Length: 281
Image 1 (cartoon, rainbow, N blue to C red):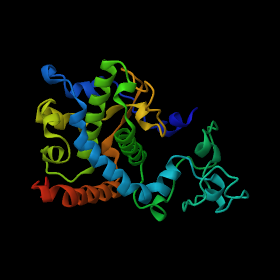
Image 2: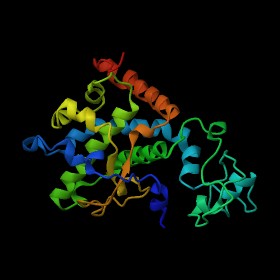
Image 3: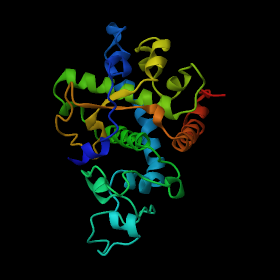
Image 4: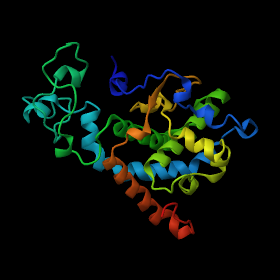
């Protein structure tokens, strides 16, 4: 099993009906005449996520290290590793400790049906402040992807116009989900989306009522968005690529509160002075 599969294992939601999940095209299906999304409509959101990533990456680094399986198992288990730091390929600075953690579950996968070791992270609140669920960690990966896209995307590298258009729709709908899930907001309102993203882009989508309903459903996202390294000089995205599902309702309260404050800080530092009104009470 490769690293990406391990990272998303156990979090792909199995559903009996496609109605239980949403995909990017469904956010445009009733307004086909205005369906195309050009790069200029992405720029406001991209600037937002550059700020968010650069503001949060150092704070969240050690916590994502544990969830991404980049920490040294011996340090997690015993607090030390027999190898020197430059000899061990894993992170040693991790604070988390769990003596009963299963090594096979953490480093790859455990095939023992009655394993006597733990197959979950325990007592996270003793060591972590922000990341407590798989969804929290997935969102960190998605924020990283949007930031890397903003800095490295080359339009001409993807030669098929239909691939470019689908990618840009996927990116818009991803940013909509992230803003809706992480920002402060008023109930039954999309003011927060118009505040942080290009309002014209939001108008291209389905009605407000339908949009709010779809944002409550698990969302299927291209798996490549979770990869830590993408060669943006290649034809790296193709239509109908493999997807996995994320349920944004599984965000932990601690993670939500942290990002609520990041969005408020962005508003006060970047948008309020330009005359924008807060989208929350």
